[in-house]
Amino acid sequence: MSFSDDEIERYARHLVLSEVGGPGQQRLKAARIAIVGMGGVGGPAALYLAAAGVGTLRLIDDDAVGLSNLQRQIAFATPDLGRAKVEAGAEALTTLNPHVHVEPAAERLTGDNAARLIEGCDAVVDGTDDFTARFAVNAACVAAGVPLVSGALGRWNGQVGVFTGRPCYRCLIAETPPDAETCARVGVIGALAGVIGSMAAIEAIKLVVGAGAPLAGRLLIYDGLAGTARTVAVTADPGCPVCG
Image (cartoon, rainbow, N blue to C red; front, side):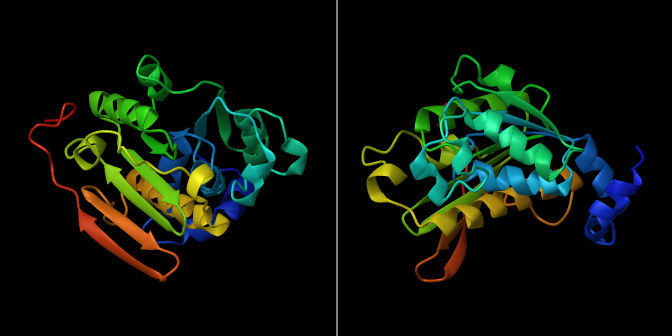
């Protein structure tokens, strides 16, 4: 797979990076990554994956851009209000990097369509704030053997984990928490979305190029208010209904 002169200059900082180089950049160009939820996590992750030269990005979201989104969802701008997020997101990504092919899917991911929506993907980034969707995409990824990068945020805190089979996301969160918080209810500092979305993009890139140690079986927890981060192990649940 060859690169045009534009691509060679565009990806110059990757091409001289020993962990990426030409072979890694070719793997990125050949990769297809699904972004589930073009919100606070998915938007920044998609921007950095497009900038990195991922060949195909599949955007999965049934929502439209609202004014309150713009405080943290930096893939959108004021003129995008009312537009489908996958439509506005596709335009932003191709403006950033015309070498990236975007597949918009204006659908809400469910247990019925998850397998179809992630079919053919090399990795999935999940940034939804709905546990039904999180459980559905996790089950589909486990069944298809596709690595899942999961990001979440609220208030001043965020977390990123990578699930490559066992343990899976359901080993971490067995059931929907009864006191599950949403950004709409408890708030979120806008810049936190960029931090967690960027971390999710880094993990997806590492998985594709084979660099470093992905957060497989680990959860990185970031406290923006304290300015600290820690990593904890995620253990497999023998009774997990998905991977146990």
